[in-house]
Length: 453
Image 1 (cartoon, helix red, strand yellow):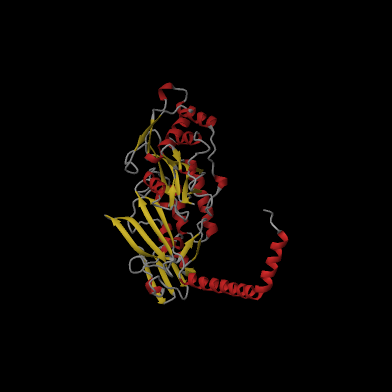
Image 2 (cartoon, helix red, strand yellow; image 1 turned 45 degrees about the horizontal axis):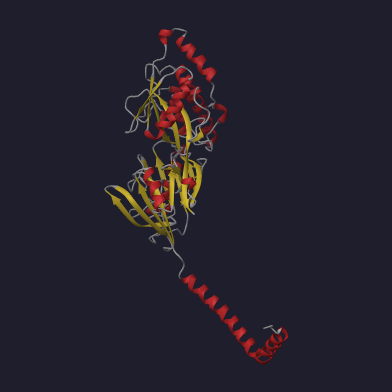
């Protein structure tokens, strides 16, 4: 049966002619209802916003007093904050004055700040405890620290978070809940300081393997601080729902410490040879040229050298041995933390090229009391002062390094207030430290953050 198009068109025209007023009325009413409903829903959603929750996995055993700084900074601020170059900036303090040659620090506090429990922030709530420091509070917005001796890194020290009533700070978040396993934190829940719309749950895991598994199982939405992305026979990077961010952790420096009091390694020529033989790159991190981050204001690249020079290393070995086979260097033992075992093997291969045999000894209890060489890491302070690591009198002087010149530079560096003068002091410190070679600075480790897309 053929369709009569002219008839259909005629019927449609007749229908609209008869009902056009009704159709127009309902169209206008529908349009009005649409905009009213949209306005209503927008108002309702604004009153009942969606809570954003993030579960973050962290590796390590931490007590409430040793939490990572990035967690602490979620819930509290200090008088100062420190940028990537190590420069102190205003935080809870708006400004400061340094008097008496660096023995008196006067901080002027910001107005109209409150702790997350509603307590007004003022000088009486700052309860820093420093040895040999007297504290005055002349008014609610001023706090004065009187030091026994000048101490240039004090502005960096003042970045320590200010807490009251346990862990109540001036920050973007407040602690809602902490679960402990014995003395260690198992999980911590933070909520937005101005409401509970932002929720961060930190879950702590004993190993990277456990954290990677937690991410795969969906127990965490983000895993931070991973140095290895392997999972079974694949990698987390191959997971379609995983976003990977690669960073360099300039707060840690993987280093080989030489026992400078050891009979064999007390020879500076040998330490130089070992250093010159090291590879130019390490797949695990960004190559280090010295004891400082390249972003540090004290970093002096002109005084540093970290280029492999096997020919020079062999010449140094010849001067040590003098062609006498009986004076060959005996096998050396490199003690190493388990996570750096592969690095130790790469180092041993490089040293083998200059005739050094290396025995690798894995240690699990930190720095051994008696060692020839130790491959581990140290935390690079935000201020260039490394007094505790290299000064002769310090128990943390891993290399048992003794140098009156370095001692004097370190002593002057922490007492000198003028930044340019300090920069010159630490330029000399780097120059002479690397010349003595009590340690070989390898790399700043890569870390990975894995997020669920």
